[in-house]
Image (cartoon, rainbow, N blue to C red; front, top):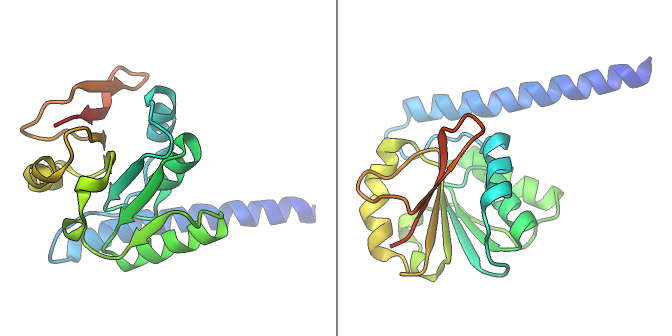
Length: 183
């Protein structure tokens, strides 16, 4: 009986915490002045889709732009063995991601609390983005101008405005979900 109550309390706390993360992301996005990126963790269905279809080379470097808590970075490191860096401006996702990386033993992941526009994206082999369409349009020209010719961009859920993907990965309902780009 006590065991069941402990399990139920853990489940309740998990649901409340996840709900808090999503609500926090929405509130911060609505009220912040710069409208950079809303904090929404990558959905597990997108993670499973990338796991099934992506073929990334081990030991290459990946950058996650506006990485939130680094959930996608942990997936890429665990699944493909790539070295990941992430950039996040919001305080809560950044500190939560640092805590998760420490508790889940991912010391090799680097999270930076600064704008990715200050980063040298030329040194990365993969760029991962999970941003809304208006943010994708804002960063598109800068990314394609400053990335390496061999770099692959992995876009979760949303397309760029000008550039066309060289490959589109569709979900089980045949809706485009993951878009892959080259220069």
